Image 1 (cartoon, rainbow, N blue to C red):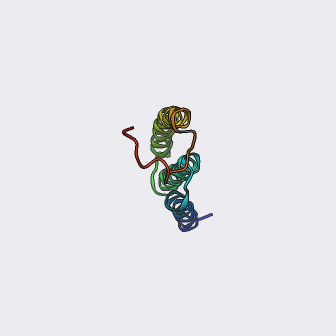
Image 2 (cartoon, rainbow, N blue to C red):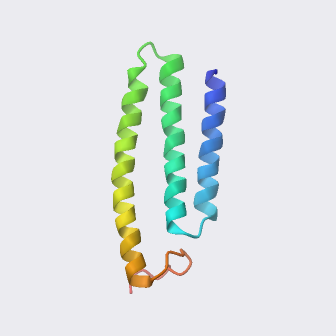
Image 3 (cartoon, rainbow, N blue to C red):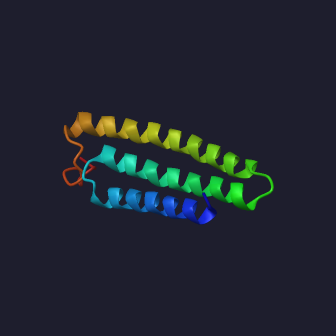
Length: 101
């Protein structure tokens, strides 16, 4: 597998994530799409570190950092989703436009 193949695959994953965020009406689906986009970024980090750098640990360090940030983000986002579901009994984004009530 070459660098170009890895970058094309990463671009496809990122595009799928963007389409998911733009088309989803359910908040959990949006969170999954964001996770796909972050995994595409991780794939870029590791691909460039593997193919272009003499020391491949830099890509792994960035990926671990992104994974840690993603875990924190998902924990906070899922807590918000659960509290919104308890309050509004729906996770449809169109129904949750009015968040100040």
